[in-house]
Length: 383
Image 1 (cartoon, rainbow, N blue to C red):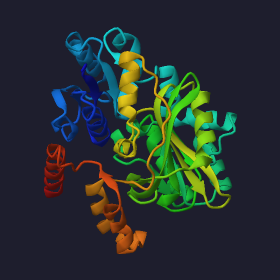
Image 2: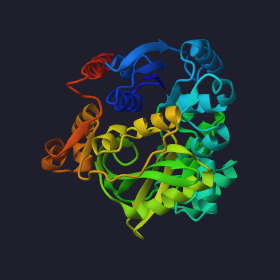
Image 3: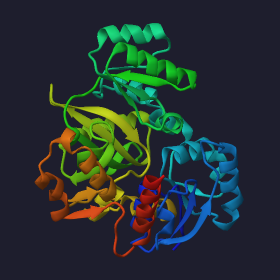
């Protein structure tokens, strides 16, 4: 089959590589982080190290164009926000050579830059946490007088903030800390949001996964987060497939408002104060727990690939519930590190492994990515 171009190959990229590989589709990986492990998969035909899309976007795009004559007409799937932002901004240059599995910047910017996401949510009646994007210290101080602490200082563009500060967000315990973090981001030229914290544990978070086309969801899949890394505000490390009808309509509404098409994972959190699911973010690319939907009977990367290559539109289907996705090394590490904070019983830690599940990285059929991930973790710990 025509190979798929997977840009970035950490956990999200590995999920796409394996989902397509199971259907006989080989992958060609353009990776920009040597710590990635997806490019070692048995399903990868070729791998190419390219410049980092944030550190040198012009060189990154030039590398993709230099490689284009060898892969004319292949579908391209960016699997990190950094890669997605770069290819989306340059879709006009890439489109003559690749089939884009991503949206143009006019749409991508609406979910990559979260200030636009929350403005759209507010305009279209999608519940969301109380949020402001301060343009001055005075505006931040005014928000401090109106909000309860702790609150969150979140970047508008997560991948840019992480590249500078090596963290996704900051929980500010006081107004002074909130303003200090805001000023630090401003000095780095980064926009941040000040946002109320939605109470509740990690298991209040849910995913609305959908393949959208012409303003309609062709395929939908929902799942509940069980544990995050780090706890409370991190990315999921354990997820459970589950029917969650309450997020279908708000998920559809925000994607329609964006004019989105293709695959997206939209995250919500249930507010225990009123029982309403509040919008957290929209990820317009294949997500961290891609292999969960595959295990449950919906192979989103394969559906996406078929639509791009042959024009076959995805069709809705039932899916299996009660299946866990486990990011095994992160779950073990944070279960040990955060045991006192999380206060789970050991049976709760072990339950996903004894119930039907799929691991994020470990696979007996494809062992090299796990071996590389483990060796990289040991090397990093040694340093």
